[in-house]
Length: 320
Image (cartoon, rainbow, N blue to C red; front, side, top):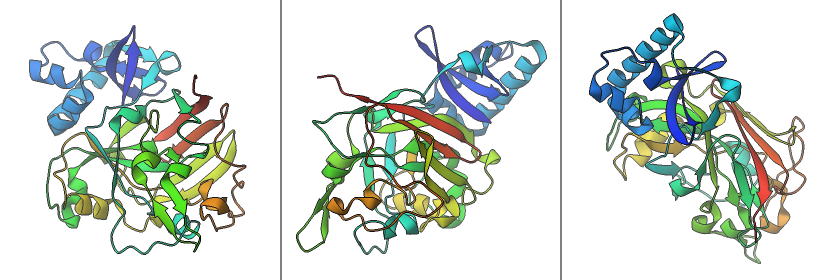
């Protein structure tokens, strides 16, 4: 199933996609649905935490809607929001070989580990704000986002995906000139705090696809387009550390709870990769268009992952 949140007269509602419609889960749920299930159908984090019982209520609402037409909203008229407000966004950088090759060399034996502020989350078709007071080098990073459903700590890799509720798309928008300082000797210093955390830095969506619909998260095509030009074109099969390993690794340090998002890193094709001022060193592959600099006001960024959909956002200049 593909689960969404959408705006209805200023209120955020939960829905499930059914063809070209959003089914409002509360409007469509059958008479007699238990109160606890109604609560889950009104809040995405509660729905995620409810696990299989929550998903059973979603299926019942979908079946009821297909039978009597209840709660159906044309998708074209629905204003989608970010599908959830993550409790925490845990990120793995440098997790594709071609992204590692296009940037300054760093040797790692474990995944890179940093946090991204949930306050930066925006939804589909919402605006990424380019603020010159923050950065002149605003970059895109299309990433597969893992949504945790079952809590756990020290999770073994063999059962790591059992803790996954579903998957979404996160654009790890980055202020490169805040993230990277290049030393005279060619080595670099990273400062991921200001480089990764600012308003509108985390577009998320358009939906959460439940785990049962993505049987192999390591076999998904991933693309980024800027103004229609293909900039990133890869597959999750090229991750250095796969989804199961990332769940295992991050659960070593923190208890993963329902609603936590793990962002799995981006492939090569970023604007950074061809920016020698910040250590970019890799020529672009022939199947993608070389970035013409960093993101500017007026640009449209479309992040696409197979089986999930497209996350579209426009860049605007900050108001002074």
